[in-house]
Length: 134
Length: 116
Image (cartoon, rainbow over all chains, first blue to last red; front, top):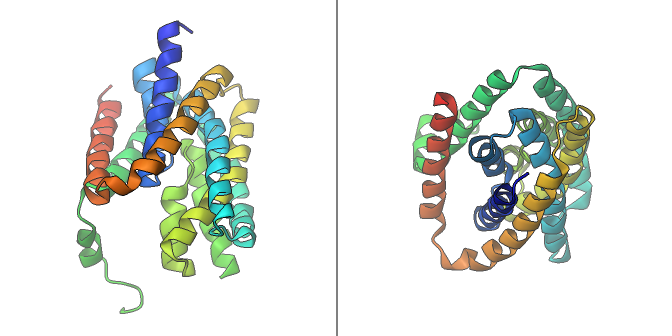
């Protein structure tokens, strides 16, 4: 990798971390498209790399919360039981489909997440009556 | 409640493995709406749950040679610095406008990805 690319990667990480700290949104949603669009990474490699980066980020973040008494460790473990199975299935499926299809699916995810953040919140509440009232 | 948590974890894990993201975007609202968690607690707990989930995903991608270790190291260094700064300036910025601006940015990214 060229020095420019190395600097770009550190800056992408900085931006992703900044947003994660500000908005509580994980960095992956920004890191993956940045790697693909700015640095020409393969979609699969961008996703695998993003997952590896998320480990230390989530670990340090949850340690801070844990010290402040906000993490319910038992619940986190129960969550992870389902999560581990889902992650294995999802990752194997992602690896089994061609890159351009995976990229389109990722773009679809970005669109949904982006629109949810962009549009005012009450728009969703009005459109979808709560389960309790119905 | 326990089965609901397993279910939320499974759906979020599927999304995490499929798209290379943490899955918190699904876990947090899921825990708040379906399992009765307070927002802050859901956020903190999901972050802890993401650690093993991302580890499994990274392992599967790594076995298929789809992880760039040097890139991951640089991204991790940047993001660990960024998250400290972000958490510190969080109180000074208006949450809603920032969320909208980022949402708009993601929509632009999505369109770019679809067109390219």
